[in-house]
Length: 218
Image (cartoon, rainbow, N blue to C red; front, top):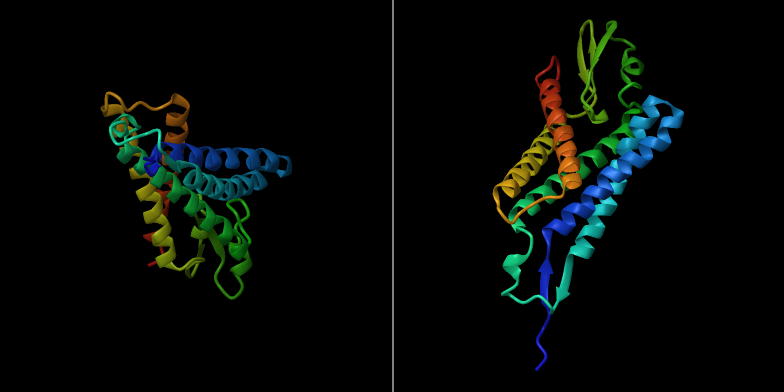
């Protein structure tokens, strides 16, 4: 009698595919953009991280969800630990979402890090003094002599900051959990790349808090 295949989702496969799409896209487009200067390279890195990561997430979901009748319930404990890899994969997906929102915001405000749009909005205001920003172009705050002007609604800024913090915590917890499990294990390259993503998210979350509590944002 033929039995129905067991549907299997392997979070490690999803996390790794999404990770390589995310980081690989960022590196590839940053390298291409470097020919146009540093600002273009940063713009390319965010674009590559956004769309390469989105492709990685999609492929990860497709490839990691399979029906395999060669793996029965007795063999499932030998599969990679689900919870830590789910946390890592979720953190990477949050990083992709943050980069997608940032890339879209770049077109809205016509600025990206070195190309701040703040001077374009200084008409009728005091002298332009500085720009508070994080790695994300959605998080500009223009500081003038008579006050400050955020270029993104504080609720969206808060959401981006929370997403970045949650992603960093999820990846860090997943890595620590894997190291604590005798059969967990994580490839050194994957560990380094996921650590880089977690660091990016953590730094941006801290910078996002700085912008949120800065002058004129709240």
